[in-house]
Length: 345
Ligand code: UD1
Image 1 (cartoon, rainbow, N blue to C red):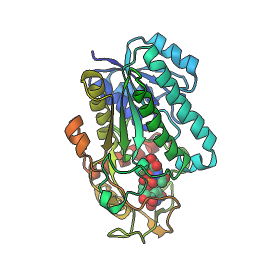
Image 2: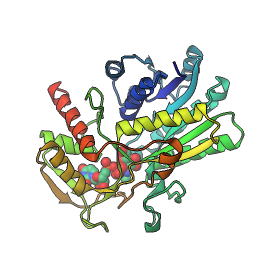
Image 3: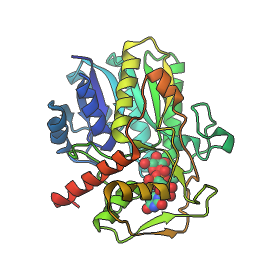
């Protein structure tokens, strides 16, 4: 049995898939989640897939005393993967203080508690949002591309949290950290036992696509077809959530088992830019379902084009995105069909 890992936000979309991969790799997992945006029955799903039930504590990472109690209860925790955060861009513009309080306090609590409880490493969920719109000469974007002023309080919490971890390590804190900058995570576990559960009307593209395909939404709107891209629609780097989850396992091994630098940053993407239109066409081809879609005006705050140069993660972490976009979209559709079968959506 390998080390014990605390996964904050472990019942969420990326957290649940990462817990499965950690357990498949032999790690013991303790999940902490306040269930503000997820349900505890995800734990059953994780157990069904991996054959192991992770420990679960219904605790809010902003509660310092309760978090201290978690580390005391599980003295073997050696690493943390910190997913727990508020993540809706639009909501963050309306409720900035909620976002700052939640996303900063939870990280500060973990950094305070790590040395006290001899926790060696932390992997932080960051985002390509820190690059904003990279200048054309910086595409595909590498980790050394300039950080642009954040477009939303949510984006700002990612940037500032990266700085908080950096300053803490530079001050001599006895910890190591890896910042993973995710591109656009999509899809669900091939078993369709766990997946993405959007609250209300989805803001992100894939849940909107699958809900439209299911007839829950009448029509998918493509936001803007007059961008400076080959077909006029925005370009993103869509990364399969299971591949992304595996990147966390590699990062955790590196932090805990090697003498790597105390702080490292990696882009986690496929390296392939895909336009919204291409994505819709691929979905239709992969699933055989015809989508009702139409062009609509641009969405405020959208980035025109961004995709990763994942060379550093490929070489240094020994990780590579492996799953095709077709298979990824099939998994998202399978999950949507399962939600319908269970009467959930
Ligand atoms: C957004 C956030 C990003 C966050 C990520 C989380 C912004 C500006 N960025 O990324 O910070 O980390 O979600 O997953 O909000 N689209 C449509 N129609 C739709 C929905 C989306 O055309 O109904 C298009 C968007 O214009 C975009 C692409 O699909 O070009 C992907 O959109 P989305 O899934 O919302 O992700 P991002 O905007 O890339």
